[in-house]
Image (cartoon, rainbow, N blue to C red; front, side, top):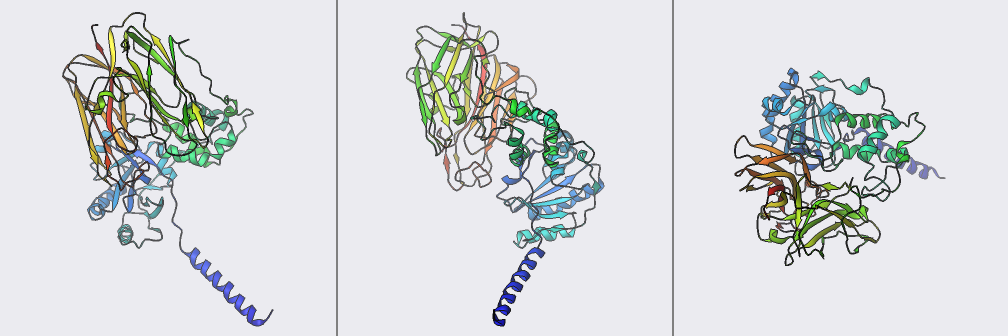
Length: 563
C-alpha cells in the first residue's frame, strides 16, 4: 500500500474519530417515562398529552419546605411570560388531600404523587427541584433550581435554541424514598398475585388483552410496557376519580401495589425462589358459565364476520323477540364469542318501528329501555336490584350494536345473551335516559366544554351512570343537584377512553325527589395532544358514527310504574 493511501486513510479515520468525539461531547437529552396524575381539581394531566406546548415546567413541591415555596413564587413570576408556550405544574410529593392543595394558592395545577412514584421515577432529589420536559420527545430540557439558569433555559426553548439539556444547582429539601431501605418484592408471593387479580382476566391466550401474562417470562418481557401503562393510567381500564362515589364497575390499582410492581422492575425483575409460577397456573382459556343457572331465554346473535385488518365501524342488528305478553327482566348475562375482537356490544329494547338509536336521533333526552352492554373483562351477570326490572313490552324487539377490532386474521363472532325473567311484575321499572348535547367541534380545539342536564319530575332511584363519547372524548362528570341540599359530584371520568364504554353501577343508589337535577359536563379534545384523534385538523360534526362525535351521559334509574 502506498504512503499516499496510508495518509488518506489516516485523514479519514482521524476525521471520523474527531467527529465522534465532538458528537459525544454534546450531552444527550435525558429520556423520561410518560406519566399521568390528577390535580387538585380532579383534572387529568399526562406528560405526552401536551403536544401543543413547547415545554412543561414541573416543580417538586413540599409545603413545609421554604426552598420549594420560594421556587413556586419564582415560577409564578415566570408563568405570565411563558404561559403561551408552556404548561406549569407542581408535583405534590406528599400527595396531600385536595382541600389542602387548593389552600396553597399556587398559580398552577398541583398533581398529587402518591408514595412519590413519579418523583422516584424521575429521580427527583429535593423539593424545590424544577424539571422542564420536552413533551414531544419525552426528554428533559432542564433539571435544577428555580434561579437564573431556569429562565435562560426557558428563553432558549422559546427561541428554539435548547438542543442540549441544561442544569443548575438545586437548593431544596432532600427527598427520601422507601426503595432505599425496602426489600425487593418477591415475584411468586407479591408480584404475580397482583397480576392474577388485576390483569390476567384480559391478558390471557386469545383474550381481550394484546398479549398474555401466562408465565414469569411473559411478564418480564412486557415489563417496560406494563410500567408505561401503569404510570400513564391507561391500565387498569375504566378508571374513575377515586374521591367520589364508589362503583364496582371501575377498576383501580392501589399506590402500594403500583409501588411493588415498579420496585420489582427497578430491581431487574428477579424471578425469586418460588418453585411454582402462579401465572403458569392460570388456565389458558377463559371458562364461561351462566352464573345464575340456565337462562329463561337465550339469544344467539347471527354470525358477524370480522376482517383481518382495518378500522371497523359499528354493526347494527335488530332481532325479533317471540314474546306475545310483557316480560320483566330481573337479570342478564352476555356470553361473548370472539372476545379478543369485541370492543363492546350494547342492546336496547325498542318498539317495532324503531331502531337502535330510537328517539336519540332527534331528542336531547328521552326515556329508553337499555338492556345493558358487554365490555371485555370479568363479564359477570347483571342482577337488577330487588323488586325492579327492565320491561320488554309484547311485540318489542332487541336492537344491538356491535363494535369490533381487527385482529390480524379473519374471525367470526357469534355472541349470546341470557335473559332471566321475573315470575310476577316488580314494583319498579328500570329505565335509561340519555342526556345529550349537540355541537360542531372545531379543528384543533383541545378543550371544548359541553354540558347537558335533566330535571326529574317524579321520585326515582339512580342506579347507574354511563359516559358516552367517541375518539375525541376527554372527560365527563355527573353532578347531582338535589331538590333539597347541596350539590355534589356523583362520578367523574377524568381520562375518558373510547376503548372502554362500561355502565358504572353505583355502590350506593341515590334516592331522588322531584326537582332533582343531574348535570352532565365534560370536554372534547380535537387537538394534536389527543392520542386517539384520527385527524386534529378536521372539523367534526355531531353524530353516532365512530368518525363523528357525540356527548351523552346515560342515567339509569328505577321509578314506580302502574301497569
